[in-house]
Length: 504
Image 1 (cartoon, helix red, strand yellow):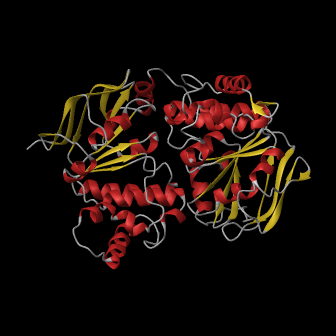
Image 2 (spheres, helix red, strand yellow):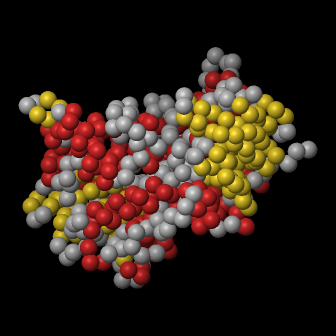
Image 3 (cartoon, helix red, strand yellow):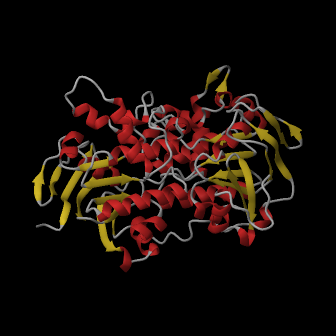
């Protein structure tokens, strides 16, 4: 009996002149959790799409349980016991959670009538160990993080022997991720083999058995987790020493001057009586569990959610916005957690993405000036060190990290004084993360006020000067200095009081 559930031997794949995979080999043992790591564009997603039958390789072979196989479609992959949870959410928003979870089984059944009670019961059994999500809820009504959990549940419903998880915790908080790791441990104990793709070093080293690294479409190495270090894996991924991914904090950059004051903000039910101040030149973090109201605070400040009470004072003047256009004019901009849905227009050129927030800035006599648009995009692309071809290329041609830089460039094109970022480094590689952190710290040093919402506690601790912790729609406390650590944040996020802290 072969010890391998899956083997990939010398697989190659090209897209036109671009060689995405160049003779890559990979082996997955039975009952192991094997991390696949590499920067965006290294070839990880291409390899997984080949294993799942979405793409066909140009050369090489794939073996499942020691037998050579041809995986011509996702359906064939399912028949071989392979399930893939994509990084990008691929659910049907207009049907229920239960129907999405059982979609594959429903498509293959021959019965004319559907037993919806059985569907809901099956979905409920799977969801019980993941999160409190109603199987009858419409997927379109769920948050991004809740949709990610449904994606994972959908894969678990396939009862597969090989499970591929592509950035499964990117949209999850620490608590929800902890539940997922518990599920992964159970699956491993049952002999299920898991390929785990993630840019989060801490979770890879805590929960995986081996790590394989790809770089520029080539296989670099496979290491036992117990026999290597995070620094060594980073060096193998990027081909160079990266240094600290969090830039040094500059206490002198955050002034005592209050840039924005939020007073007693409430919306239609998710957040209540939110009050805090953002100082000029500081990076302020917002932490909390899924559903705590972090995103709703940002949407309310920017006029994207209707407020029922409260006000926003900016540079000493009340500017409570009626809509996002007014917020932009006030100098406050927002980056959504949903990069593909609301961050960038993936099918439009890079230059058009950058100018999208305020066309008037690149217009002459009522018409868009191509020269002005190109000059604006080039200036910001150079500032953000955007890795690109032509500015006329579609944003979809860029890696995830560079798409995020385009989204940032769009915000910077209107010269904002305050920037609110929701999960700014979700799904980007460690090199791109370091670049984005550098950009945010440079903006703060220049006097811009930065608000960062993140589910990654190390990011909040490493990047932010202060962190507000939200629990059930209210600010449970503020942490800074020596108190800025994971334990304190999680206690507040869970509703536990810290000595000297009071909910506000």
